[in-house]
Image (tube, rainbow, N blue to C red; front, side):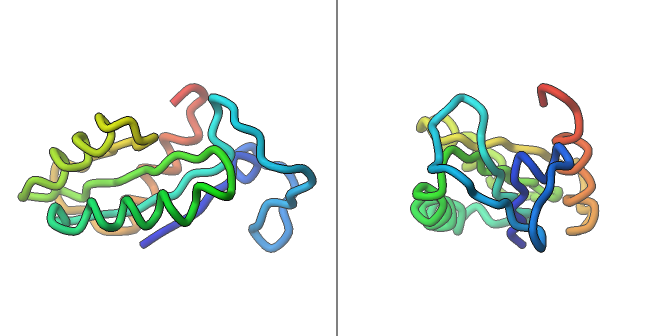
Length: 118
């Protein structure tokens, strides 16, 4: 599951069919323009390739963050995400202590992004 939510979508600004209207070229700032959200469960072996693909595809679109929601994995998924983040990537890790499903992952991200400064 991949969900892209723009900063403007989070703040309630106007969008067209869920897509941000881009009026000027992307500027690099400390604030991400958008987030890519991926829910994972026991995906330790696939994380590096997925992360590289997302970083490559999203980089031309401007400053962004990659948010992984670990849905109660029992393998090394969280550790591998932390290692990818430590390599300097703009990655955020949110975790469930048990398997809750994709809908719960979306709710977790929505609640976290709705809080200022999170």
